[in-house]
Figure 1 (cartoon, rainbow, N blue to C red):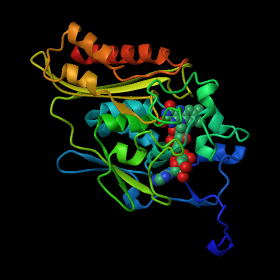
Figure 2 (figure 1 turned 45 degrees about the vertical axis):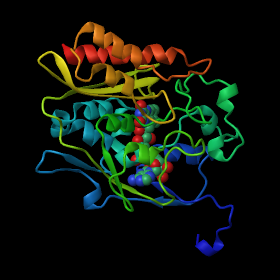
Figure 3 (figure 1 turned 90 degrees about the horizontal axis):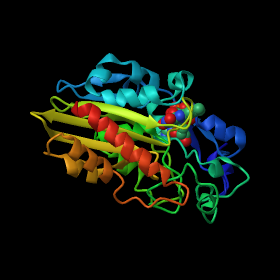
Amino acid sequence: MTSASMSASTPSAEFRAAGTDLSERRRSGVSQGPLIDITARPDTIGIDWGVDGAARIGAFTTIAAIAADARINGAYPGLAAAALGLATPQIRHLATLGGNLAQRSRCWYYRNPHIACLKKGGPDCPARSGNHLYSVAFDLGPCVAPHPSTMAAALLAYDAKIITDRRSGLTIGDVLGDGSNGAADHALASGELITAIQLSPPVRGERALYQRAISRSHAEWPLVEVCVRAVVSSGSIQFIRVAAGGIAPVPLRLSASEAALQGAPANPANIARAAHQATAGANPLPMTGYKLELLSGLVHDLLERLAA
Ligand SMILES: Cc1cc2nc3c(=O)[nH]c(=O)nc-3n(C[C@H](O)[C@H](O)[C@H](O)COP(=O)(O)OP(=O)(O)OC[C@H]3O[C@@H](n4cnc5c(N)ncnc54)[C@H](O)[C@@H]3O)c2cc1C
């Protein structure tokens, strides 16, 4: 199709990487515009290491390759565990990191071609008054679908920077937005391509864990997922990052939990306080209050294991 033959109502073109998300939306008719098949260049696939020990991961690297990389496992164990925990072996083998970050919502109203919703140009979010069992517990915008990207939640814990073909040094927040735009799942410009993710060198002595609460044992998005990094030295917490997915339109840093622990003794009372603080600012929907218990439980478990 040439640009001259495209009308104003023609849906904009969509990139296709491995197509594990896109093909389902094409089949149902939710995605209808022209496709641009994208393939890896040598600088957009694989993992490179800086002399400072920081990894740069090409956006076309598969989730399976990230999960299986021994050096990633050593330096960024929370990221490797997140990669290993998502979807199925078949999906992980194909799915790319860029596609994972830019994947569209899993909300069943959005995925149903017969139901209007904000993400398809509709007037409102049908999940609000409908069945929102798997929706947000931090209601930050007009759409109540949680962001689906597991890798984004883990990369948020790692303060990762995203590089596109137009910009560099972007935070996860720059790329995914703050949840206030119910019409979009990311804040990339039209036609902007994620090319790589830059990580910082690991903090000396840090350990990290990732865990998800899920409604069935595999092949499902998590209800809640948490990635925690910590440096525990001489019995106190010198460094802490807590990030969670499945609870809000974008992955969230749990800053109240972090504040409860930064510089504090890694004892049961402080861990319990930080787990309680994980739900600070939550405003669940009528059906999503259960996610708060899952969230504080996951944070508690991970902190206990890191402090042990
Ligand atoms: C049963 C099942 C369970 C799943 N569970 C999880 C889970 O727990 N956690 C999770 O995170 N995911 C989960 N997924 C989703 C899966 O991880 C995504 O489908 C996959 O990561 C998308 O990658 P892809 O390369 O196939 O992207 P594609 O399907 O090719 O593209 C997805 C979207 O991203 C855009 N895109 C692709 N690459 C780029 C790029 N480089 N720059 C800009 N835009 C781009 C495309 O235009 C498209 O809109 C699951 C999927 C299935 C089927």
